[in-house]
Image (cartoon, rainbow, N blue to C red):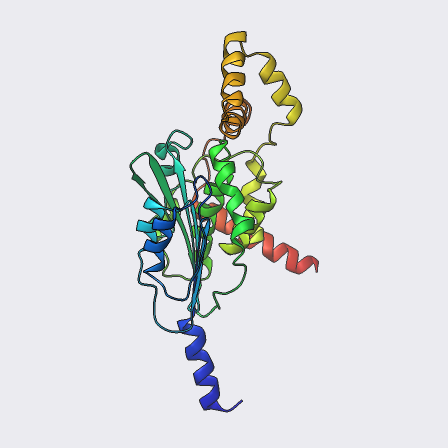
Length: 292
């Protein structure tokens, strides 16, 4: 390939953008699909999804606005290395105050819109192609996990944000070295497939995750769920069964799992600073390199 061809290829890669949205709780009406269609002529649009790619130019819509109005999950990749996941959940299932504990400027952010909380998770890696690991179905499972009280996806995003400091010395100010980690959820040593997909997408370093998981307790089991259910009073059980019969089985399942996790999966109190985590991860990588 000549130098001119190389420049042309690099320019194409740098302009590449990929947008995908999914509607999980409610499909879009025909009128809503037409409204979204007006934002992109070439997009693949259905009642439950939207996919569009650009080799040049830009998407005319505002992803945040589309999330507020229509969609529950959004995935974005760019050729210049930006990756983004957005999630929309009812505030009844995920308290914004819980999300705030894991907030990191420009990396883990959130806002509320009507009765929903919308979370935005971002990873930037200059020079790396943004078209890898764009598996929205795999990552989308973290939405149900968050709704069921599993806060591991938020901690993974927080950890990934500060992990980027090792690759970009200007990512944060030195004062951030003394920032304490947020509550450490149980089960970091045994991530679900959706959480593994999220970790890959956000470029979470394996050594950093191993270090973080050292203080993470094991998660409650299905046997623990049976024990917890046996302690519910009869009136509560009858109310839950009635809601299942009325068609709210998925919501009841999430509430039951969240109740179990609230009682059994108590997050570890934050004791480590960002600097301590990054230093321990660097030491772990060095030890592994020497062993090999």
